[in-house]
Image (tube, rainbow, N blue to C red; front, side):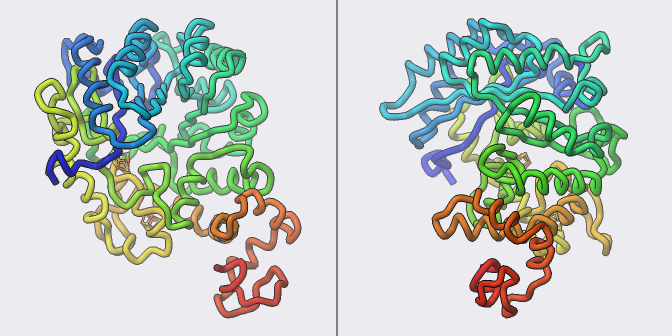
Length: 428
Ligand code: SF4
Ligand code: SF4
């Protein structure tokens, strides 16, 4: 592929403050990344900033462009940096293109001014929170080791007060893994958020900042517990909250049942379209692979589009598929899971082949459990109806319905009582 045949759309997570952060969360992998830039300023210069915005908007050939800010902690740049960014975006925007800014924050510095700015400029904000106070404070601490729950809860209230669209990013770790419903209901009912993403903490014991090693820290989620965590929340969600609360993990998986490209890269067949930009213009293959082996180049020396289209990045993208173990190739849920993220592939399959995903046992259990309801939702969507209809079907038929259709063969009568074969009804 040449730069002229580069993908029309890709995603760059920009880290304007590099890995600098005003917290010291125990499980944070970004803090280690600071070691890649000893003595670095950890502030994106105006030159890099302008090159980023110009090159990104030149390279994207889509009606909706996303400028994604992440850290470290991007609020450390101060508001003027983002005011300047809006000027640059206006300067380089192609006619007819709509630009959306996304902004991932720990919430510590948010105040009325920040939230007013987000609202006025339609920023979509992601707020990191791990559940109610006891669970959140266990790992998410400030530099003095104090819990941050009260400050983050205040940030959530401010975001709501200013009507900022925001979602919660919640890590699933060894502390909150066995309290799924408490966590989910807290976000839904007390924080009042409609969009939630759960991110399993899989933290390897290794050389700082690199994806290597095959043992995990005791902060990491247990694979089977992760499956149970997802299952319990799924059962609550699919009966009560479809179309009201959006759990990105479920939406991403549903895309697999629909045979569509999903919204989350972890379940996509290949990688390569979600890059990471460091504060000094260094571009890496992925946010999870900011390490020397995945360094593509600097955007002050090479246009971003050349780096995205480079053979190295294409190889990185294909490796996700090429490296699948036989166990995945024979898995019933391969088309949904695609072996999940390569960063988590470091255990052995039951017959000893390397490269299996650490979370596999949890994912398999979750996919198997969710399969009947996912098939129902996919069928509703394919027939032009809303996935919300699944709640009515499940409440009409009772909760055992899902278990029944899970065990029904394609040519048997559908357990819904329609008189049709299962393959022509809920098993389509
Ligand atoms: S390596 Fe993981 S996070 Fe990165 S693009 Fe691939 S699936 Fe996504
Ligand atoms: S569920 Fe496990 S075996 Fe199946 S594709 Fe995913 S990682 Fe591979």
